[in-house]
Length: 171
Image 1 (cartoon, rainbow, N blue to C red):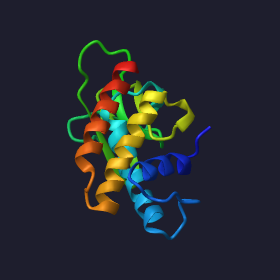
Image 2: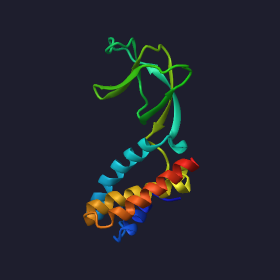
Image 3: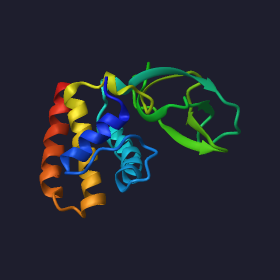
């Protein structure tokens, strides 16, 4: 099973850099790798409804005075990255995801809410080979821009785009 460091090292090798031993290294590769990892993970999770990162939750009501035009607020899971849909509703349900006092809340007019969402807490081993390839390509692109000044960016961008569209089709 690949670790996060193994995946980062694959991306570093793609752009001609030496691998790192850990994310805590003080090398430019590790420092930029930590920054790129978080950016790419967020972008990647937002790019498709990945089955490996999709989960469900019944939200707990959270007592807050009415938020805008909404009657109810519910506490979102700590691993919530992005909403896929609200389960059990036939039409589009108006809602808003808000942050209040460090908590992420789901505001709507629904008294009970079950959501399908993308989690930001998943194991790399859950990714398909195509999804992992697309993630490595996107990570390589970001690292190339950060470490090499975009020398190979056009090639990597083409590779990342092809990898992502293949991964989405196979998901």
